[in-house]
Image (cartoon, rainbow, N blue to C red; front, side, top):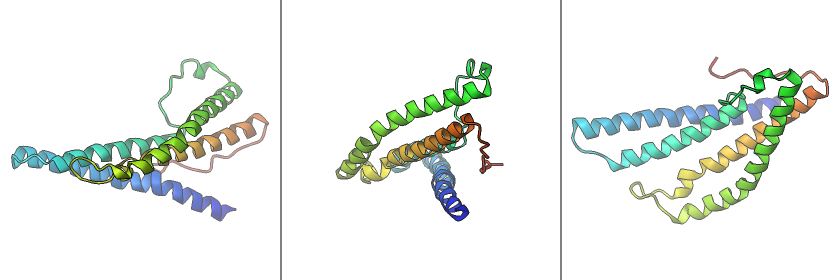
Length: 172
């Protein structure tokens, strides 16, 4: 069972950490080259501009999934901080259930739409939009999995069981 957990953790890391780092590094290089071509060579590149937009979208969604994984999203916690631990767990479970209901409604239409976008090409790069926007269904799937995991952990905690958070932040 421990091996399965390591494999699943590696798959999550593959998307949320390693792929995100590669995409973010590519975004930085793309923006640097865009500035260089525009202001040093006086030859703006539409290719780099479009690429940086799409890379930015990928970084946002992969980062959002990672933030969900470690429960690090920005939240309005004025009331949340005043609740007891049990109240917080109940509130987190309710919000995760509501979030998953919305994400489940979005998931299959998003997959269908992403597949249909293969026919449409981006204006400058001429890449099918499927490759550019497939990150959204990936994001939905990752957040659904993380929320279901959080729900299960909170239910176990609410029933009085000890639950160990096995993962440490990859940036620590």
